[in-house]
Image (tube, rainbow over all chains, first blue to last red):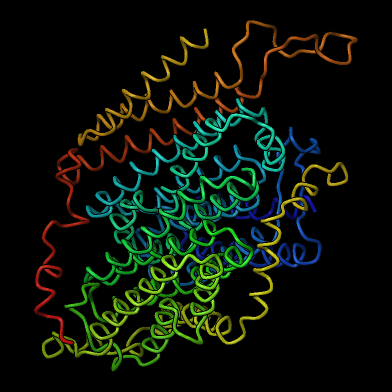
Length: 506
Length: 130
């Protein structure tokens, strides 16, 4: 059991190191990348089944008992995050075969990609704050490398902003960890739940909460700390943007959820008020940015921001229904968002640009691509019966239950504005004729013009992801029940704590 | 002793933040160094400052003789230093790369990824057919 919980990061690290060695042999490194992602998916599925069966499971590395050694824990939330990460990892890795050029592959793209997945999965399974910091760093350094890999001028420019702000968040997190250790003498999350409840220094706890909200808020792109995201996410190859959009900000949200359910005492309302204001501002300002822009990927980047607002909103409302809504929204959003970015990459390949004014005619060129985009985009906007509708329904319902009518109103306005910016992409990129089609007819001559292997690599992940979106929308019940169970675990972490701290777990 | 170290940490943090707010990337880099060292010192102080022996168990005894120093913060700082050094090296390489490719290390002049006047946003109202 212990080994199984360590595999989500040991496996990608091993594959990643091999891929670095093999980076000059394109076939070998591509094969390794596929094997790594497929293996990760198998591992994630088996861990998921186990967490579903047994509730929270924990493993102590090296048999050191809980508050002293390194603890790995998987509860329902971690399990579904692992599953989603592995799913996105595999889809984007297939897409990257077509999208990432050979120059970047010889620079070690596949190796960095596996390290990124290792960092993400490590953050999900760790049960210890300092290890969370270490996995954040693994993820961060891999993402730095992926962002500037290839060294184009725009990449360097966007990379500076990404690196500069993310390092600040790292330092805030480190300081907060130091102070928590000084206050309680432990960094094990389960032990912290017990220890922090006994610390009678409200000022210190409030300060730690603020520090952690800043640190994880920068990672998660919360208002007003998100400006690095739209500045940098559109510069690397689109496969990199897709995996960043699907996973990196969500790791920040995951850390916030962990912190304010398991670690801090449950009667701690101050952080939730702060998070509520930040979430609402994030939703509105993100979607307004999306409405103002006219570049495919930058619109999507601003949407990432606004949807982070929804995810944090569920945490801020802090009722069983709201947290379940957050878990459901996480699953829906990771799938739909990654898919939209993959589609934007294929659209660029066919139409020649990300600028909406310079492209068009994609519906005529490829009805299949247009259909996939339509489903993913309208799911994101929350159209029934797609998956985004159920996610938003749960969150709006939760805010109405608490008589927070303003919150519900802002969520609905955000949904309407999302729809507006998605229909902008739809009408500009897919519906209107290509502006240069007379002199450059083959610019949008359709998917069939692409080589067969590339067509498969580009479309297969998008179709699989859109099928998941449809399945979640048409049959939401299993995921709703799962989310409610996950929310119950978060609101009452006694099972989690027992799994970590009881001697039988060794 | 604690209060002196706390004041040092405060001064280092303030100086680091001040430097990081500059638009010159080299200033940012120096601010980063100061701030990361301040963070390491925070962990160090959090582990209590004592002038006692390392936690070694004498021969024949079951447990170390109290009081002993806490070794855990040092282990954490060591990890943090290594990680921080790696990040610093990467950032330095990035700044050098920026200077080579973009010809500037002034963050205000780096507007390639986000042009000030995007042709698309400028002309958007007229071109939007609705």
